[in-house]
Image 1: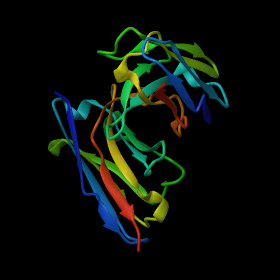
Image 2: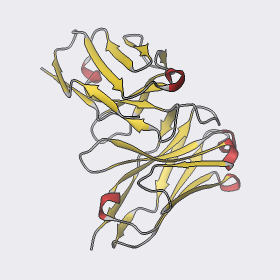
Image 3: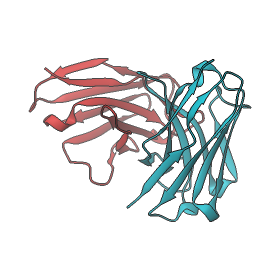
Image 4: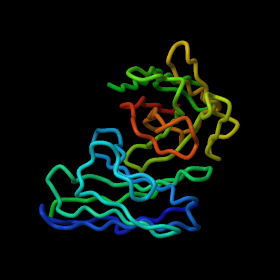
Length: 107
Length: 121
């Protein structure tokens, strides 16, 4: 399953809303899709799994939605620490695949 | 606190072999699926392999199938990745990651800091 993320780069100011898209080439089984955040020099961190369940300790400004082939990660109000690269991953079938990433940068 | 510590990375010539290790602490290692994920310099994430159901089932990316072997030693709380026939495009930071449970259909919820593998002559 090929995952295509858009946009490639999102330039926003703190306090703004961010909407990240992840489109799959075929149906993601069971909506088994996760979103990860990665900051420079750090390992990825899971934000959302099962398309819409926030991981432990993740602030409620992060929300995931979608099913089938179209998924969205929304950050309601950007905080300075939210800037980085975001990846979606499907883990319902093998091989697991990641999207190419969306970079969220400070405008 | 869950900790994953990778080791064994380094510089290796094309065609060579290397074994990565990942020592886990802070949780009951045998109860969780484990995976390796890599990231080439300046590039995105690529899933490499997963080990589930207490090691009974293994899954590999097409790019490493037949060359890499994932395994675990629960008595040592250690995950391994044996890499053979290495190629330049295997150059990457290799992350060890824990599954949310022991099942296949779970995301990776904890990650190590990575071990750098460089394949070059």
